[in-house]
Image (cartoon, rainbow, N blue to C red):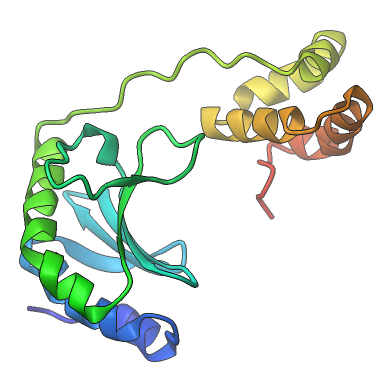
Length: 193
């Protein structure tokens, strides 16, 4: 099993779940995945496609399956990322014992995730985005802004729409839209730098 220096360096810096990751890592590499760092976290790929990423949270370690929604979950361990997540599902660990106890099941889920990639299975198309009225009106009044918004990735469009829609008051939604106009015109997402 080949160890990768960038992941070794990540583990050396980790102060939350390093022991759990050290126990999980051989399971991931044993599945034949390629290890690297993406988005600042250990990420495992197959054939150039992202399969899983290791995420450290305060109260748990997560192994996130990028296409987890396409996996059978007979053990009932896959957890949705959040109410607005379409595809990703994760397994959560709170101890080395959890990782050891679930390692055979994790290996089976990894095999299933690799099969999803080998079969070329994709996620179903997202439903059409229903824009917040304040955003829809602003886009309709400014063709350059509308073109810039439409050129954003669907995920970035959705992120903006969710952010605008989270505000309860019309004035707040309108203010958020106006504040984000320059970023949209620059082709940036809500959280892009």
